[in-house]
Amino acid sequence: MSISRDGSVVGASATNGLIDGVTDGGGRVTTYQYQGEEWVQYGSILEGGMDGDVSLDLSNDGTVMVIGATREEKSGHSRSAGKAAVFVINDDGTEWILRQDLFGDTKGSNDGTSVAISADGECILSFYLYLFPFH
Image (cartoon, helix red, strand yellow):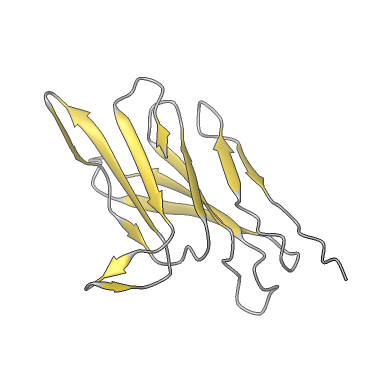
């Protein structure tokens, strides 16, 4: 969960999204903006493409968002390497547009365990946790 600095935009993530009542295992992110006296949906609901634990952070003004997904993988790359995805809101606040996917490259590193974004939305940090197997 994340909130913009002025408190007008909030975002929440869930590990598994529901599509037609069935768990898809692909994650879900929903954002809301306070307008007058009520919270209304802000941007599009993002579903799928976020396998594993899902984290997020918003820029100060809530117009840039980074999402981490721990088990996501780029086709042909390491299993459970994870990713961070950067989105920007469109001009009328109805859709999140993907700016860039950043994939981890180490098997099991779970990149995206925790993500952070700078106040202006120009820098991101994607933390990963590498679990060493003990035999």
